[in-house]
Length: 311
Image 1 (spheres, rainbow, N blue to C red):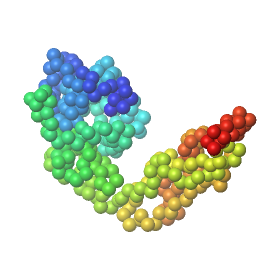
Image 2 (cartoon, rainbow, N blue to C red):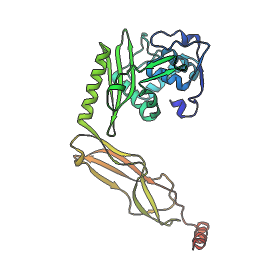
Image 3 (cartoon, rainbow, N blue to C red):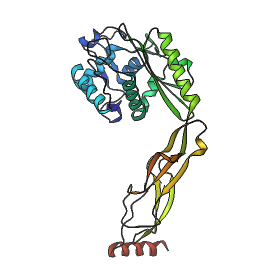
């Protein structure tokens, strides 16, 4: 998804299948070395039915070899703070030293959902097909069909790891991730994930105060080509709260009464903070919506000329 979002990979690109990819065991769609599938089709197979052959084919295409791709996986895991994770392969089939934790899987899941939300186009598919309808796909994640607000995310099972699931769902603006590892049966993993998500939705809410780009205030500008600048939020303003605490939130806006030019678009002008019981729970920068030059002789002439033309 990172390669797609950066423009390095397109959904229509055709991916070949090597002997190595076609020989993978476990869940697969029986890729043939004589066929190619588009990235779009590969993602369907990977997300919906955990196709190991497609996973290896994509890894080889993106990094030249599975080994190189696994190296990138471990680098990314370290960057995300996945301190209990070591990847030995790209598909998850049992291998000595290939380990992770529920916390690390949650970190990885959050990164995917936040940075590459288009993945949900695939992780929310319940049934589909490939090869002109010849290959039927039914999602291994049964919560997609049975849990309200489910957005994914991924199942996994092996003889050693047993039944695992990273389950994600969104309701009323609140997005949650529940990770189940080593459940004794596939039914247990879905039941336990549902309990965790139910607990989160029953006890917490996401309170949205404003959106990125919303105007907080017009601030007077001295010595500038414009008399004021629009102060806007640099990001969405919202906090995760225990239900019932929404009305106890205190908002504090810290902005100067005026500012001197020059000002560049995106310059920090101040910040807005939210606190609960005198404890700050969120802070968002307030920035300049547009640039304002300082008035010098050339700018003054231009300003006077524009005013004369408009009048």
